[in-house]
Length: 188
Image 1: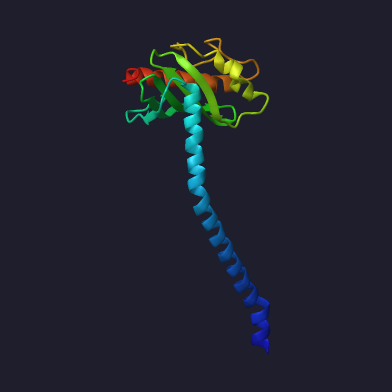
Image 2: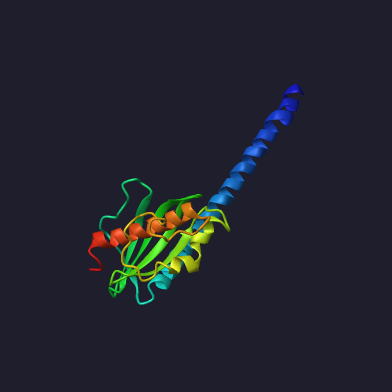
């Protein structure tokens, strides 16, 4: 009787909990297996839509296979370059450091070397403060530029008051995109 009581009190609940954990883990794995391809497809569709928005003249894109630019101080890295198949330009994904941490932006550059658009796609900046540097109005100030002489937004007079660090993050990323375009020798 003591053995039965010990089993019922201690062993049986452990077996039940382990069984529940195994069933839940299997259900989560199955859900992940079903959802992962859909999530990946959605991410690709969103990225393609952003590329098309930044470089409307492009018909389709091919990934650039060459060397990617990164700053010496480690604050900016071009992570992806998509070249328009009709050679109308490129769209680059750049990761930079901002006030809230990492900031990801996409920069479109036409075949003539002029910026066609900028879009912040991911950030951890403070809403309403740091995100002032992410507004369409501020990002539009870069449209048409073919060069930036300095990675600092303040030195280029491109910063947003009250969002200096976020402005520098955005600016330095655009600076990096222009450096990548230069390194590539333009659209080939």
